[in-house]
Length: 100
Image 1 (cartoon, helix red, strand yellow):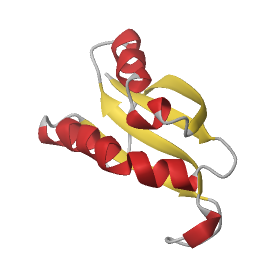
Image 2 (cartoon, rainbow, N blue to C red):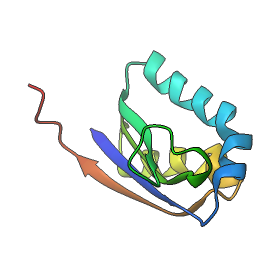
Image 3 (cartoon, helix red, strand yellow):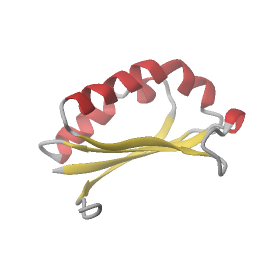
């Protein structure tokens, strides 16, 4: 089943994000290589693809896991969690409908 991992950043998270980004992306690449990643990306703090120093307010990852517990365990090991980027993380089951 797919699960949405929705994270909210702490204030002024950009320096911590940049430091942990390579390891964070490597884990996402592993999900993609396994055919389990539907979509992933950050939420820019302002209405632009590259928010510069404004940074980001959080992230969304939608990926396939055997269970919510497995999604939770994976999310807890995210380098952004270890770096203190995220203030909180919510995980919910997700049912892809479109595109069909």
